[in-house]
Length: 199
Image (cartoon, rainbow, N blue to C red; front, side, top):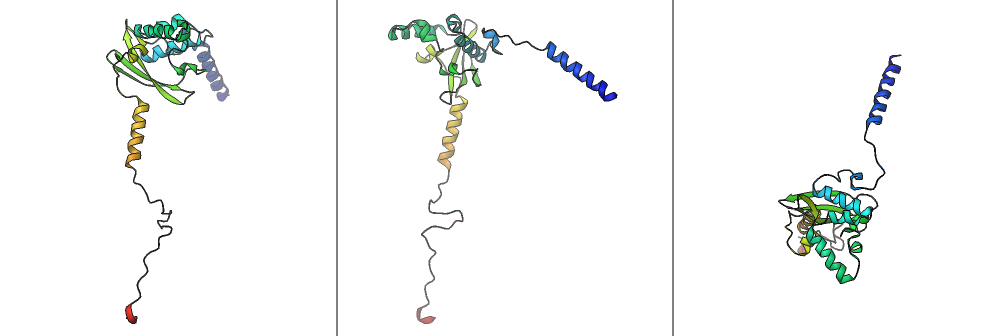
């Protein structure tokens, strides 16, 4: 009887937790992605991703720095394409992912920042630049091309590649002729020379 009462209490608590928990909306706005409203480079990327998926050009523009928008206008004129088409993927292939890609290694130094976002199609990490402008973090592709963006330091992917390169340069090269037992193929130990005159 006591087990039945404990079971009923546990079920009641579980149903209350599920009934009062957060509701997931089916809308396409930037707050539909968890953390999209936060003021950080990560939050800015999430807003960019949501705007790209919603085909919301104004939303994409709102996450771009002024220099990035100027850069888009130059590209639009050079390529003879509408501005909306130049901005449709938010300057990054990471937005092609069907769901929000992995994000890591947010680095901030003053008004410059960077964030690594996984590019699923090419299976690599893109290190995206951000600047703090008008009190918000914005994608800084224009600053990067104008060489006015200051890097907050190397990204994790670059540090990992450098460490792997350093390790491969420090590896002691083994003899290709050696087998697993340490014996050498085609190399025989020297034979003892026979004693002269049987001595």
